[in-house]
Structure formats: structure tokens, C-alpha cells
Amino acid sequence: MAKKSNSKQKKMDTRVNFTPMVDMMMLLITFFMLCTTLSKPQAMQLTMPSNDENMSKEDKSVTKASYTITIYLGANDKIYYIAGLPEYENPECMKETSWGKNGIRDVLIKHVTEDGTRPVAQVMAAKLELDKQKTAFNSKMTDEQYQKRLSEIRNGDITGTGEKIQTLTVIIKPMDTANYNNMVQALDEMQICSIGKYVIDKINEDDLKLLGLKGVK
Image (cartoon, rainbow, N blue to C red; front, side):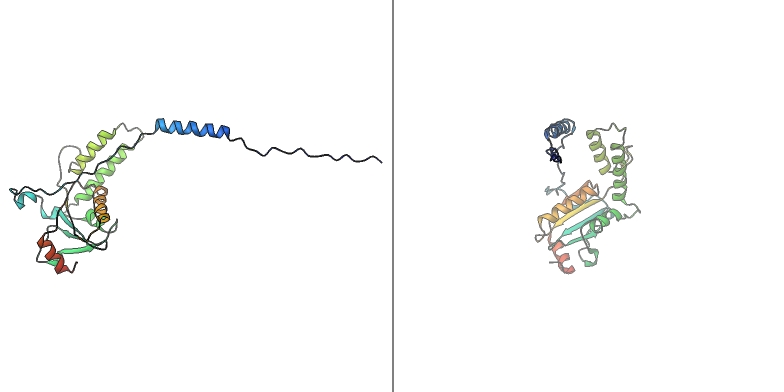
């Protein structure tokens, strides 16, 4: 009786050669390095209060009261606002809100002036239209052109014809108990709402009195 031959199956090579993949990754990295535009550093423009003693209070506050919102930054992430100029004898003019889109951002966007307009909403709508033009498929708008037009919009030229509307002026007054993060959050809201006119002012004695009447420490 013939013996059966023991046949052995040939083992498959399970190793994977990653050398072509490394070459492909290097080509992709080189491609993105050559084709990607490096982000340019952006500077945040701040408008500080004037120190000129010869300038009257009327000259410092040439905007209408209804086109002004005063924001107070307090302790424990508290934020308060006054729609218009402060009425130092009336603590009810100051209201408390919160941070984010449902707080101070909503207050800024929905603020209505004495003539029934919403300046922040108008400026944000014009910026949204500008962003659509910039990101359009056949757009030839350069970054310089975009920044120039954005600056015009923030200054009130929302139609591009040179005719300006009056924009909102925001006065930010941080208390000594406010933290640095709150100040950054307030400046971020100015950028998000495309507010071009805002100042960082100091708390004065009248403000402290009003905050005391409101029970703010």
C-alpha cells in the first residue's frame, strides 16, 4: 500500500510594504505646503478714550444716546449693560445679561435706535453679503479688497455707495473685580457683531454710585 505524501501548504507573506505609502505622504505634504496660503497675522484695532483735557464731554460723546450701549464687566463673569447713556440717578436703566449669542450678542443685534433702525443687524447683514461675494466660486476679490470693504461696512457704508448710516457705539467699562477673560470675550463680541466703534473706558465715581444702587459689588 502506497504511503500518502505529506503535502505542506505554502505560507503567504503577510508583511505590508509601507515604502510607497511614505513616498505618497511626502508628496502630499509637499503639495499642501506649496499650495496652501499661510494665514496672515491679524491685529485687533482698539479705540481708547481721549486724554485731551481741552476736549469737552460733548465732543467725546458726539453720537446719539440711542446709538450707544454701555457695558459693565463685573466679578464672577457678570456683565451688565445700559441701552443708551447712563442715567446715574436711575438704577433701573442698568440690566444684567449673560455672555454668548443668547446674551450680550443678542442685545447688540436687536438694539433699536430712536428712529427704529437696528444698526448692528444692518452691518452684520452687509458683512454676510460681502462674505458670500468673497467665497463665491468665480470670485476675484483679494484679501486687501475684502478688508477694505469690511472696514467701510463697519464705518457705516453698507451699500458701497459712500452714503453712510450711523453705527452703534459701544462703551466697555471693566470693573476692578472683572477678569482678563471677560475683557477678551467683550472684544470678541465686537468682532463677531462687526462693531467698528467701541471704546474701553474707566469706571468713574458716578458709575460706582450707580453700580452700588444696583447692588453690584
